[in-house]
Length: 431
Image 1 (spheres, helix red, strand yellow):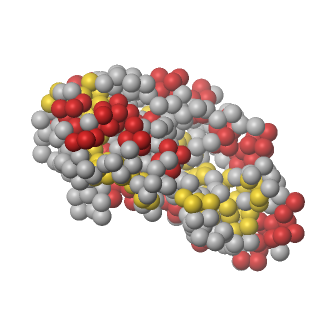
Image 2 (cartoon, rainbow, N blue to C red):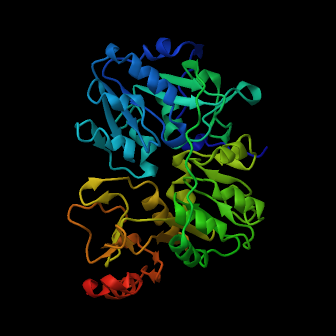
Image 3 (cartoon, rainbow, N blue to C red):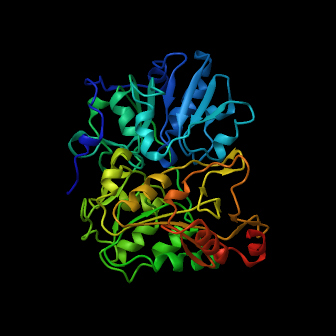
């Protein structure tokens, strides 16, 4: 098996931990009152441990749960401020359930910044982390499975590490692998792995995807986000050769790219032949596919999103989306006005990295929202809207009406190019 050592991109490991086996209550009772508890996002969320934590919530007066994008409702959300408060760098529908109760705080941070948030010397030091690991694998190791991100940094530095041992979680290699002595408490607790339902691209998504796919040449290294457009793009690349992946996330579409022979990684400038990612989310079939796959290498966010690493990527194409794009190229990918609906994720990181070595940063989106009633291309961002990616990093914007090349162009030229790819119903309003 080919893998990589990421220690240079991670903090030193703490002293060996005791690696005790115990019940959920035994382990969770070790969390002090007033603690900040970090929880992994997406498919890696330890739902069983969180349910157990909620059941014994009377043991605390205040607990902060710090997390990212949650795929599902978890039990502590039923008790905002009693005792659970939440903070997030990537909000999602389940987390917004507690916003009205004043129990949710947003952390403005790109994915590259997440690893430093919760370190002992960081702005939000973790008191504990609840993780999910696969059943022990080669040489008695455990695996974080579907999420490494900034989580592995916290595992190395948090005072308390509690792991839900779930035999259903896929075993992945790279920075996902943990030694038993990196875990304080091992709690056997089987549960389903949270799936990301595969997007079914419609005609609109496929039209947008076709324009993006034209930018992908043989030997390109790709980064994808989530959604119908990325899935459609991956399905259109079967005739390409020697493509590689260096991404914050992989999902079902990667399987088809491998099966078609398009994805080999042989021409990647770093980690050739390895699919490098920090998160994995998809269907049960996808989880089976990544389980013990020697081709999939889970890397920390401090590597996948690092500018010095991205600058070494040959023929890099980063593909993301947006809520709005202003005529000057300013991009909002995370809010509706002042209402936070997502987070920056890795978009600013990958946009910066793409520009360092002649790569391409794509924002692909439908031209309208709200069933055609609202233009996504606007004269200026909505009042109080968040700037996710500044205009200085805007490169290619693609809608179903074509492509606007913005990098290196004047403000007037940008506005003209963006008007041409706006929906015809709104072009007169963009003068």
